[in-house]
Length: 448
Image (cartoon, rainbow, N blue to C red):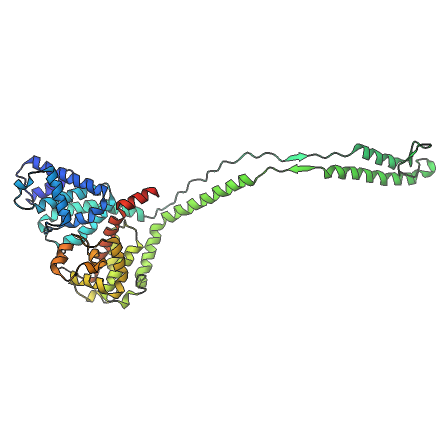
């Protein structure tokens, strides 16, 4: 889209470089310089956007001065071409820078689209509407595609096979026992008789069979022989068996590794299932929230609150329940949830300044003020309404001039409860995107 945004402003007659292509190139280079600033520090995207949208942006705003300095650096004599501060030129190069940076960083896209959806309907940009429609839709399609992907629930969940290298096991080692031959021989000799070895002088008692195997003693000898030989043989066998030892391989380490692999595999599988079904679970939780109509931030039913207070809390509670990248349908879901409250359709529009003042002071919106203070810095130049809500002591929201200067919202602007909820939700998303895009956050993310 090189020069496409700038060319759109030229074609509409909103900026005039006298047909000099070299001057257009200087503007393009300035836009690239500012895009480089955004890519290094995406947290500037919100303030850049709010100035780019506003035809009446104040000349002393820090963003305007930053853009003028960048233009001066590329085009030292620009004042000779433009009699006054070239507000349209500044807005065009800021817009071109935002579109360029959003192509590389979706957080910039979130800031840009959210701010555009809030501010453009209230600002006098009818003669630029054709330019804005195409640009906003282009960036929104890209951001929405990423959000839809993160919210999608796949039809099937693919889990890779578990990888485990089976170790080589050694066979059990068997240590065989041996019977004592001398003991068995002595036992068998004793069973066979006689009672003495080498009868006569020096005879050794065997404590053996007292019978002899001759004719008159054969039967008792056989009985005694069987008893004694069986005992000797059994003793030899038992002695040999008692010495047998089976040494099993050490399976502690292989089983420990297997348990670790299985545990990791199950853990990763559960994580895959959790990630794959996160979108479905998120949608289920949102449906429950809408039907319950209970505010976790306030600890009470939305029906107990004023419609505008309930709408603001619903925006906050939904913001806390969804990730940064959420489909455009989430804003529509919020609108339907607010309409679901009894009585919200019976209340007309209220001045935006009154709604901000209510958010600054109402006791039930303390959680909104706390969140706003964390996400948005105290007002210093153009910023979101959250800056006023989170830092009420810094500016009186009822002061029309200061209110418009710091927010860009025309003092007479009015919103109903549904639109107010949508506005706050988008600002919360945009402010979170800039917070997540801060240099400190990005360094922390890289370390983790």
